[in-house]
Amino acid sequence: MHFSVKPSTARLGAFVSGLDLSQPLLSGTRAALEAAIAEHAVLVFRDQPLTQDQQIALARSFGPLDLGLKRVKKTASRFRYDELLDISNVDVNGEVAARNTRRVVSNLANQLWHSDSSFQKPAARYSMLSAITVASEGGDTEFCDLRAAYDALPEAWKRELEGREALHYALHSRFVLGDDDYTDEQRAELPPVAWPIVRTHPDSKRKLLFVGAHACEVVGLTLAEGRMLLMDLQEHATQREFVYAHHWQPGDLVMWDNRSTLHRGRRYDLSERREMRRTTTLDVDGDAGGDHATHAEEPSAQTA
Ligand SMILES: [Fe+2]
Image (cartoon, rainbow, N blue to C red; front, side, top):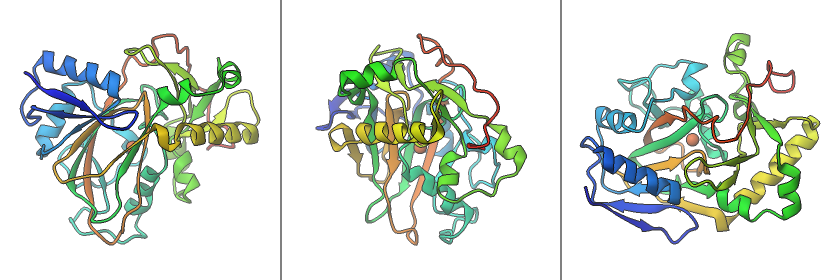
């Protein structure tokens, strides 16, 4: 099927038109989309209101699906599939949830720069976010380009980072926001994993700076020095020149590559309804390609 890809005016991101995502993707179309996302990192499809079944079918055509933090804490869902993640401020009854409820507090972690499920192996490859009800003000999603961020690092930093690994822990971003009501079993359910801070994208072969809100320590450095380094690198990676900000319209579907980007939601009025549905594929062979990352040991006292 013929479709067109129009790059955004930012360093990353492109608008795709000429496709109907409610229909099964031909393998050639899927391969062409994978090539486009390897180049642009974020693909925007307008006017694609999908049913739950259509969104699941679309995501499955790109690989097995991720459950994210539902592996730690299974919560009641409005949706028919566990693999549909509810990125909303709406409770199970379909009402706008009070801003002090667990769902709303937990979803606020989406406003920290992160790569989906970098706290597990395999991590996330592609995420697909479908906009159902958008905020009247705010609520954009921003994406930064970790390849451009790496390219722009001073040479001394590149040398310093070569071979360094960071630990990514599922609940770190929750703890940062004061959401710490987890049992010992839940805290141990997803132990930290180590990822190289500098990775090579398997498709584009470009080096990238793999940081984000799940990264909580740097292997071989003190907690304090490691955290400062991670904060410094994230500040570098999220400079405006590396960012595409997506302003949502109902029916938008945005697909991004979690290996080459970080993203964050932006603030909006929590008393106003905002509904998004996410599906995410697992990066099943993500340890290949010279990354040499290994599973970390048990969670340390500092991260658990
Ligand atoms: Fe996310």
